[in-house]
Image 1 (cartoon, rainbow, N blue to C red):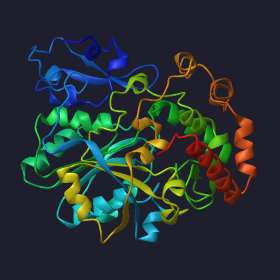
Image 2: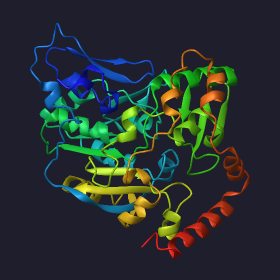
Image 3: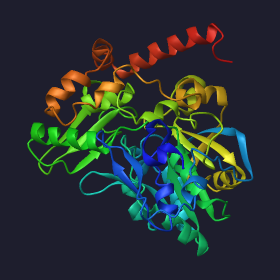
Image 4: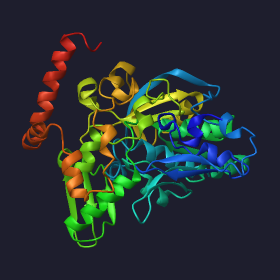
Length: 403
């Protein structure tokens, strides 16, 4: 049995729970470490040595379904429904796909916050339930037993749309062991994930600052600044918008300071994707397709398989789409070409998470690395920032960085 299934090699485990869910004897349990990330622990008294956990681990076995392409078709896309678009992180393509699946009698799996603002994967079978699945959650999502749930639906012949990070989709495929015609998957272009423990401590700190229990948290709210990185925090009495550049948790996330160790060596950070579809922000759309740009957000949509192509063709009534190029998609989505780089501070950043008050902890470990840049970005009006970005892009283009 590989060491990391006994948590000895944390850099090899993504925390997908495939080993736990495949075990017929329930001998594998996922437990939090001191940083708040979950890893498998084997109860030797229950383990029969059947090897299912090894054979269904995505780290040990790459499962490739037929009809999948290593070279995706690339599109820019945005939802026609402006109300849902405003409540989506980017161009609303998750909603377009999920609604189509539910309209055809299917179910949708995705990440939602529960009442305690813990990120968990849940199943939705009604359009009204999709609201909690919309929007980015920059924290590790607990998959619970959703692979088992998805398998049960698939065996019943019900259509299943499962969304998650690439490692979560790889975990599902490894757990299933084979493709199902009624399964559709979509992965996200992922930077990496902080632990729920860190996020919960941050929320407790915010609770004191805002003077009330946090009841809602939106990482990518568009009300103040449009499409970008501005979060909205709500208590029963008030709502506050926070700029990502000045927020300790958010800025640390954007600077890749707080991710799970395996994120820094992620083998899924490439253009050959795990999902039938890939959904992300189309950063840089204003340079490559200026006529399609919208301050409400535009999605990057990669079609990676025949099933993905079939779904894409069914979206034309719900979304506006134009073809694009892979080199454009890669330009501002660096995790399409490789994992986030681990900063030198990562080894120390979680060590005092329990010992220090979060305010002191944040000042010591989570301060923005380039506060001047953040201040300038806040001061300069958005139209001028856009002009400056276009100028810098033209310089890059003239130097041959973009074809």
